[in-house]
Structures are given as structure tokens and as C-alpha cells.
Image 1: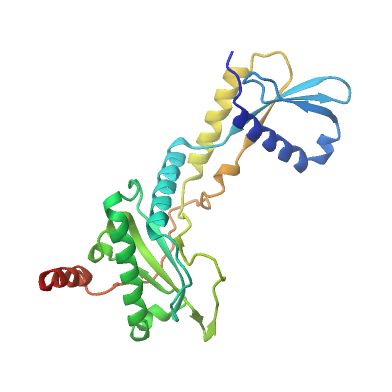
Image 2 (image 1 turned 90 degrees about the vertical axis):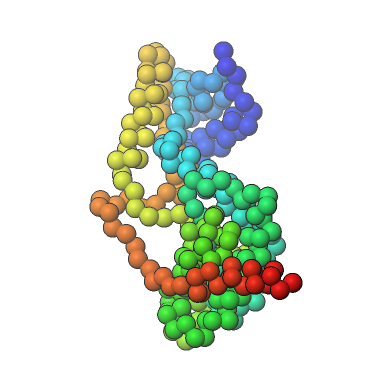
Amino acid sequence: MPIRQPAHAEEEKAIFEAFLSAYPAFKATIKEVRQPDAEFPDAVATMLDGSEVDFELGEWLHGAQMGQAKRRERLVESIERAIGPQGPNPSVNFRYVTFTPREDTPPVATADKAPLKTVLAALIEETERRWAVERHWRSPQGHDCRELAAYPPLGKYLVSVHFHPLMIRGEARSWISGQPWIFPKSPGGPYSPETAFGALADILRQKIGRYGPFSRPTRLIIITARLSHTTRPTSGSRRGSSRTSRCGRPGSYARRRRSRRSTS
């Protein structure tokens, strides 16, 4: 019989304790809780009347979405490592910078780490220099730079780099001291509720098929905590909009790099 791993057991224990904390009236009917060594059940509650109830935990997850989220996480971590320590934000025009990673893109290659940091710094410097003459960039929406092909290898890993203005309607909004000011934009966008409901139906069928025939009283707790990063459900295909503009002349940074190499 498979044995529960210690790390897994600790996680399940914490989840069940959180469940009981959320329902103090039910917790008051329980005498004690124990975890068996076997994989099933995840917890056994001994009630005040001496009876026992098995509890099984099930995660409400969609496999494809979780796979995509894991790939995004690995890419973001590699980008943050490439950027390295950030130090204070030197800009007097934008308070922080967010980037949107590409979907289904592998982590930053070793050969691209140093160029990514250098080119991102050049893009930030150029944006700072042009901010005063680019009227649209100074709107509350800021500047969403999407033409990253001129800044290799940024376009290989990023969809956009967004500069958020320091001044909004004449009022400066200072950034939190000591906090990173370059970080990934939170994942967002519409999704179909049917996808989430389908994942829920799958876990219910799986648990019922596996544990339904057991004679002991069994309760299923569905966990949704790991879905905290999914976006709001929509009934249609509404999409947000934001102003985008050129980061600079297409290919301008690449041309400057080639020019410097040819003259050096």
C-alpha cells in the first residue's frame, strides 16, 4: 500500500486545519484528528460521539491551465534572475515597470541573460529620455511598449514592457522603498467558466469512482486555493484595452548596436 510522503502530509494537515478554522461550529463537534500512513484517507476525524469520519482532499485544478502557469512561473523566475538586483528606481517619470512574458516560451537561455539585462536597461533609459516629449505616455495608463523586436532578445521572451507614470493628475505617487520596481504583470484576461466546471466534474468523478464504494462515512473537501491567480470569469469575450505606442523607431537600438560594433 502506498505510504504518504511527509511533505505531502504536512500540506494536507495545514489545509484541513484551515478548513476547521473556517467552520468553528463543525470543529466543535470533533474530538481529535489524525492522519493515517496510507494515502487514503487524508484525515480521520473522531467525533464527540465516538464515531469516525474520513476526509479526502481534492484539488480543483485544470491540467492545461496549471501546465501553462508552471511554464510562465519558470520563465518569470529566469527573467528575474537575469535582471538581478535592481536597486532604487532612478526614474523621475515612471514609478515602476511591469513586463508581460510570452506564453509557452522556455526560460531565458544562458547566452541571453546578460543581453536581456543590458537591453532592458537601455529601453528603460530611452523611455526616460523621451518621456517629456511623448504626450500619450504621460496619461494615467502610462506607456505600453510592445514593439520589442528592435530590442533583442526582449521580444524573444516578452510580449510587452509597461511603464507606469509617477505623476497622475499632477500628484506624485512614490514607490515603496526597498521593493523591486521591475516585476511581471499579473496574469489576466477572460476565460470560460465551463473550463473550471469541467475540471471540478473531473475531480468529483475521479474521487467517487475511487472511494465511493467504501462503507465508512467519507467527506470530500475541494481545494481551490491554487486557483488564486486565475482571472475573473466572463460570459462573453470582453477584452480590456490599453493605449500602445512605439517604443522607439523600429530597429533603432539594433542599428545602434551594429553601428557601434562596426566603428569599434
